[in-house]
Image 1 (cartoon, rainbow, N blue to C red):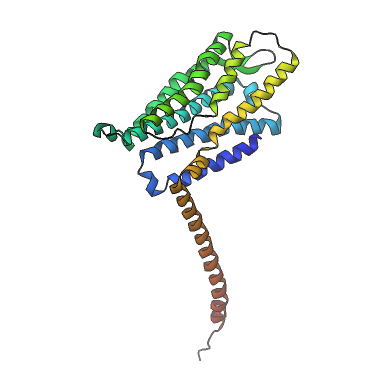
Image 2 (cartoon, helix red, strand yellow):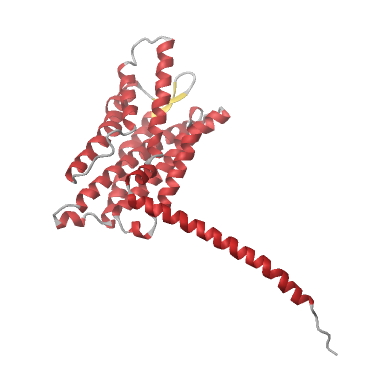
Length: 290
C-alpha cells in the first residue's frame, strides 16, 4: 500500500510542477503557495511513505536504531506537515485578499507578500514544530523504539499538538476564508483529522490495561489512519483536475504538445534515415580526373 501511495504522490507532485510552472499560472501568488506545498509534500513522501516502503522490503528501520535519524525524521515529518497545511491556509487567505473591496488588502495578494509569508511560516514551523519535536523525541523503551521521551511530552502532543495543529486549524482557517470569499470550502474532510483523533484517543486510553485483541485492533486502526494521513501528500493535483476546467484544458494542451513533439521527432528521424543512404551513394561516386 505504501509503495502505491508513494508512486501516486510522486506523479501528483510532478504534474503540479508541470501545470503550475506554465507562464499563465506563474503570475498568480497562489502558485507560489501551491508550489511550496508541493515541495513540502515531496519531502514528506520520502521521509514517511518511502521509508515505510523501504522498511517493508528490507525489514530494516533506521529510525529504530539511529537516534539522530529518529529525531530528524520525526522533526521533518512535522515541519513538512505543518508547512503543507500552512500553504493551504495561505491560499485561502490570498483568495480572500484578491476578492476584497479594499485596495490595501488586494495589494497583499502579491508575489512579494507570498514569499514573505512562506518564509515566515517556514520559520514558525521550525521553531514551534521541528525543534520541539527534535528535543522530545528519542529512542526509548526496551527494545529501543523511536518515540516520546516522557509521558508528559506524549500528553502534550496528543492533547494539544495533534488536535490543534493537525485537527482544528486545517478545518477552521479554510472555513473562515471560504466564508469570507463566498466560496465552497473543499477542505472540510481533511485527511489529517482522523490522525489527530487517533492520537487523542491513545492519550486518553494510555494508562488503561489492554488485552492483546484491543492492541491488535488499535494497530490496524493506526495503519489505516496513517495511510489516510499520507493522502495529504498525494491528492492536490487530482482535486485541481476535478474541480477546475482551466486546469483540465492546460493538461490537455500539454499532453497534446508532448505528443506532437514526439511525432515530429519520429518524422525527423525517419527522414534522416532516408537521406543518409542517398548521401552515402553520392559520396561513393569518385570521378577520375586525368
